[in-house]
Image (cartoon, rainbow, N blue to C red):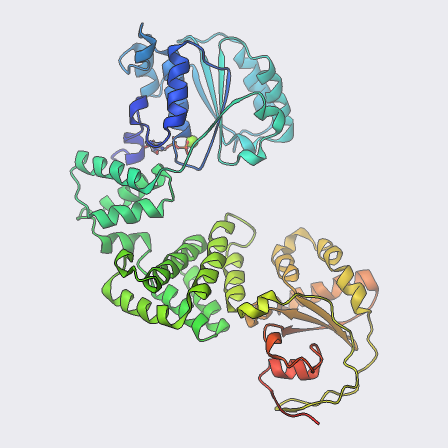
Length: 506
Ligand SMILES: Nc1ncnc2c1ncn2[C@@H]1O[C@H](COP(=O)(O)OP(=O)(O)O)[C@@H](O)[C@H]1O
Ligand SMILES: [Mg+2]
Ligand SMILES: [Zn+2]
């Protein structure tokens, strides 16, 4: 098997590290001045060079070259050992899998032994934010009094999870996302070295797709080059799944036609057949970005096949720019919100639901409304029953509203999905023995209306208020269209929401 490109092209010297000049220059200076710290924290997105630079540092401090300015020289015994992964004094610990107190204790014991090959023992603790609280404390003790021969490099993608006590002991360096043009330049270099051939647009697409991560870009190139043919834009789009897929077009059309059920079904079909929710969300954002470019007259900047461009131009005419921007924001949030989570598809579904809400609606506040429809002269409504005199409410709606958060927090952890849905409830009402939940769209109603979930909501109410209720869910997103003289939560409103129309008011 050939070596993965991202391993093969890991920088061996300072000069080939891309886009992190601010970090590299500081480290070079401290090597030259022989003033290396004992604890470093490298923070930044994945694949931006943290491990690479940590290894360079380990190599430089142990390099045998007499001129500090030339370290690492990649020719001495120690440099070669590091490059060949057989240098005993560079110890890489993956905190994601060794995150307990015992692991750090173990490390602390070993750290007192002198280096066996070099001058310094360099500990690289990757994903350090994964350490448990106890392990952080144990680490802190070591950071407070490190043996003179030890250097720690902590690396993390999530600096906000690092305790301040640890941060304050470390020299901190922030790694940046690598700009698209620098990634492209690196890919071009690799292409030449590997005798591959690729279109510039394809490389730009790869670079953009990898969001500033060099490793991702190199891995994508690897994946594309394995086809053995020229890397064209069309090939890249297909393999990377960025060819504006029918899925994306369908989703946008379902928004345009206001057909939430169809949109939801499209999403589910795509996910069922293996699409990644996050990249689907990104593709939607990419597509919307295309619409925006077209609307602003920059059609040339849109990377898409001719047929897709035709479709895009039609969509660009159907939405106004502020709608496109709003949708981009919503789907962009979904794309960044999807990491792991208990239900990776939910963010995408919620995004769809939010997009389907009319913008005026999303500005209407969700204040609790009166429980009962009072005897305002009932307007006539076509295709819906008349408001009947209402039964006495079994629950006080204000109390339910007030304790909504507490109710949700009583949900067992296993009901993460329902938790999200209950948090998105916009309006609560009680009609007789029925608890009415207002949700923003049919999509959400479809999600919540599962027997086990409804039972769970009933149980929460029973546990807290001691009453048995039935549950009814309504869409509140047509609310803005209900005339202001009609009680907003009553039967008339519900009827309007279900397609009824006020034909006469007496
Ligand atoms: N700044 C960079 N300059 C050049 N190559 C890089 C850079 N960052 C990452 N790479 C490439 O990606 C691979 C993985 O990078 P790595 O340093 O392990 O990233 P991190 O530790 O930040 O996740 C490297 O082997 C190298 O090929
Ligand atoms: Mg790393
Ligand atoms: Zn050397």
